[in-house]
Amino acid sequence: MFHLMFSLPWLIVASRFIAPLPWPWWVRLLLAVFLLFASQYHLFSRFTSGSVFAPEFPRPLVIGFNLFFGAIVLLAAMQVVLDIISILIFAVTWSFPAVPPVVRYGMGIAALALASFGISQAIRVPPVKRIEVSIPGLSPDLDGYRMVQLTDMHISRLFTGRWASAVVEKTNALDADLIVITGDLIDGSLDIRREDIAPLAGLSARDGVLTVPGNHEYFFEVDRWLDHLPSLNMRILANEHAVIERGEGKLVIAGVTDLSARFTGAVEPDLGKALEGAPADAPVIVLDHQPRLAERAASHGVALQLSGHTHGGMVRGLDQIVARANNGFVSGFYQVGQMQLYVNNGTGLWPGFALRIGVPAELTEFTLRRM
Image (cartoon, rainbow, N blue to C red; front, side):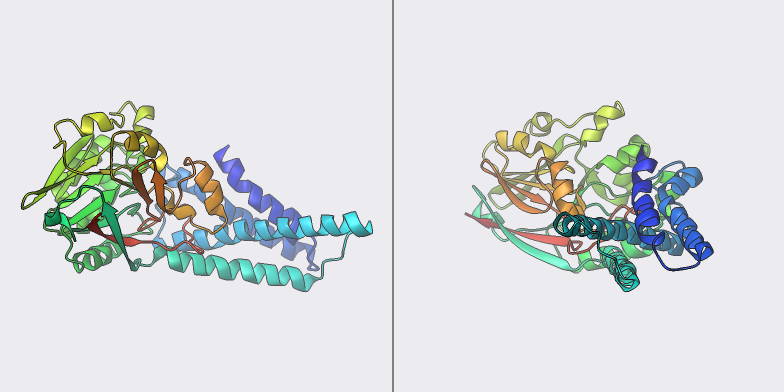
């Protein structure tokens, strides 16, 4: 079903875009076959690495697959819009309009250009996004406390060790009090990704690096990854909490495991357990990879939840579909009861669809303020 779904855009392009072109049949056939090859990117990933989530091709080939697969998806969307317009014209005139070849040429160029732009935006080291957030009950001693959120880095053949090193350098330059990573650090097994993720050991903040697993960790022997991450100077909050202290002020950072745990037999997310023994009068910030359980966190009196997972929807317009799969949460701030939820667009992106159009990646610095 997964591969059939990703074949549908190619079918639209082949039948509605390529077939009507005024080209020799063999040229149209070659183009259709080439794009069919590109559309099966995820199937080839599964054959070569055993998983659609970790393409183990050389980086230029991963970029090439994303370029043409992205162009197919964009072109299919344009063709659907063109067909809808044609149907509307038919409903008025009882005659389908003739579509000049130049219109299709323009669509093809636009799709390829947009896909190229989308990939360039996806794979760059993201700019710093600075946010001030008010925290009820925050001590004066913690006013101005700065924390950096990294999320959805998806260290892989696309987001390599060199990219990770650049992210580390940019993050450390912020001289933050705390660094939090809200899951999906990797795509691939520990044996394959060990060297690529090694640069993250260089992340440095006064109160260290706290992280929670995302759903992709559960695709690749999560226990091995959770055993390895502490060697990279990360503290894992798997239904646990840490207490930050400044003078007389205290702040609780709680973290939970991912919802995907229920499908693997691993420990499921339990915020109640994560908060056991936490100072009762200290405000709580929760790290939860997926935003879907935000209402449950709000019921625990949490002040702020930081999540990722959605990648912000990646492409403007597609974000509305992604939101529906995540209880309406896709990008930016939401008020959930008395709790604030921030859904980060992501520092990286799943290499299986690495396009960003109108939804920029983030390296996010939060400054906490008293209310």
